[in-house]
Amino acid sequence: MTMNSQSNLDAVISAILKLSQGDIAELHRYVQAAKVDFRDVIYWAEQ
Image 1: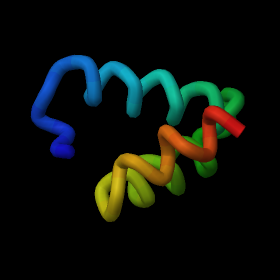
Image 2 (image 1 turned 90 degrees about the horizontal axis):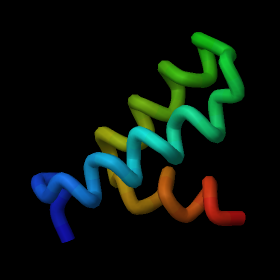
Image 3 (image 1 turned 180 degrees about the vertical axis):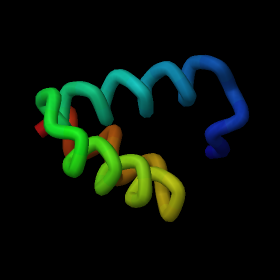
Image 4 (image 1 turned 180 degrees about the horizontal axis):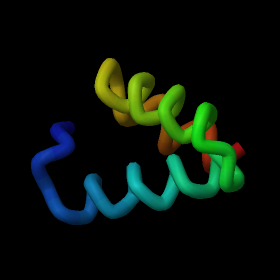
């Protein structure tokens, strides 16, 4: 699975916004995590 598909990109962006809850530092943290493995961020948002 790659982040190259539009649906994966949309899912990651939605997950990051949900998890960060408006906190810029958290947003940055989740963006960095998504760069390592975007599936983790999607998983965390679904919990």
